[in-house]
Amino acid sequence: MKNFKQFAVVFSLVVAVVFMATGQAMAQGGVMENVKAAMKAGSSKDLARNFSGTVELALDGKEATGYSSTQAEFVMKNFFSKNAPVDFTYSHQGSSDKGQQYAIGTYTSKGGTYTVLVRMKESKIQSMNFIKD
Image (cartoon, rainbow, N blue to C red; front, side):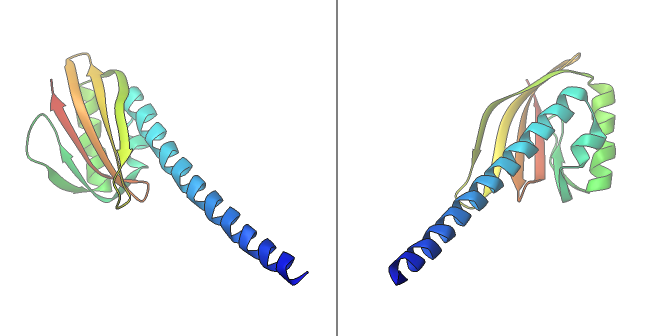
């Protein structure tokens, strides 16, 4: 009976760890899908919901600039107004061994196409880089 209790405790801990790891991965994947939907819609407000406190943005090949999440929302609103979205798709997604998640995508606007690099940590956008193709 003692062995069964020990087995039950160990099994419960293993199951809890697996569910927590799976839940975190699903949450981060959900954030990437939220980003994709916001980019497709050209919604700076929805995109800003996924920003960390400070976000680095690099637009049109210019050097990255750090903005507060509120400032970054206005910068993206301006970008979307000048480059109305047609589509946004991910070509690659991954994560580093230090927990940083990233995605490379293609933002298609009426004025052209951009390669977009999104870097996230703890399910929040740390930086976005828009490179005109």
